[in-house]
Image (cartoon, rainbow, N blue to C red; front, side, top):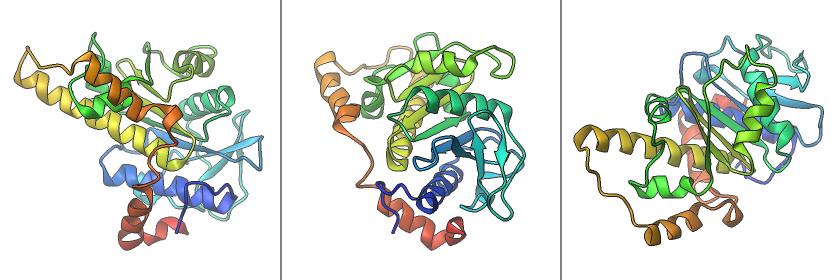
Length: 249
């Protein structure tokens, strides 16, 4: 059984592959675009990222790409992918370099996530799911990651000490100390976006959660009360082991 606390290279590869398969399962994919990364604590000059030519349901522990923070792919696994997603490298190396406290980063272009990221009011206090992330949520203006100098550093600056971010007109970004936590923040942020799109499509006068009630939700999702997701993570791994056990290979 995978656990959120292991830092062996094999364990990290398997947990990152699990995040890709879970993203496919929950419909968070955009063809071969978007990306999830993992720090390699025992190899501080490198991190793991997907090869740009693979769909998320093709990703396994062995075909993840070991990347240097300078943007070079290192072929240290038989059959590992080597098609570098430049935007992915810029985003993930920027966050991981700036935030030594986090080990996993998820970036997605979900339909609801992009929709809410383009709303001038951003994420609203309309659901418990929103309350979980609103206390650790920031935003970043749209820029072409490959065309703006120091975009990785700018993303990290706008994320600050938070664990979730709306990339305006672009999508979602979350960080986690564990794979479980990164999954959990993305799950609640994406669900909050879906719920907001549904509500605003039905009424222009939604009921919002009061500030007093929202304070308790902020506390529930606060990073200092984590890492989050440890309770749910083993069951998610069991689901993958039943349905797509090859993710470990």
